[in-house]
Amino acid sequence: MTEEVKVAPELIERLIARIEALEKKLEEKEEKDKKKKKGKKKSTAQKAADSLGDAASDAIKDTGKIISGMVDASVEAMKQSADALTSLSEETDKEKLGEVPGAIVSIFRKAIDIQKKALDKFEERCEKCDEDDD
Image 1 (cartoon, rainbow, N blue to C red):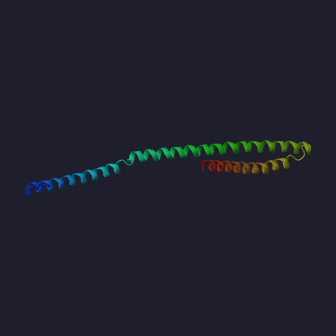
Image 2: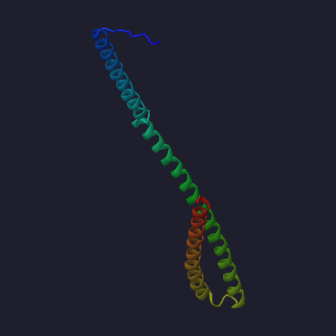
Image 3: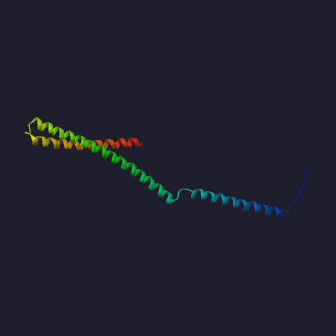
């Protein structure tokens, strides 16, 4: 049943050489594909653009946080100033304008408290914004 086929050794050598050449081509193609995949990573310009975009986003977020804190601190300062002026009015009315210098000292003390409360309000607002970001 099976027939014996005779093949010339030259043909076998040519086929082996062809197989080796094809294997070499295949390896070169695979190496090129690997290089292309590595090359598809972000270019320097894309990385720079992404970095700049992230920096701008962070700057906008931080600026918003600072403005929000400044608004809260300003409102707190105005509130405390109004309280201080009210107390001056009450003290001068109570003392029949006799202790105006004492009231002025009281205002200075309250001004120091106002600044402290305004800074506390600013820090509180910034912490709240940080918690909201997380």
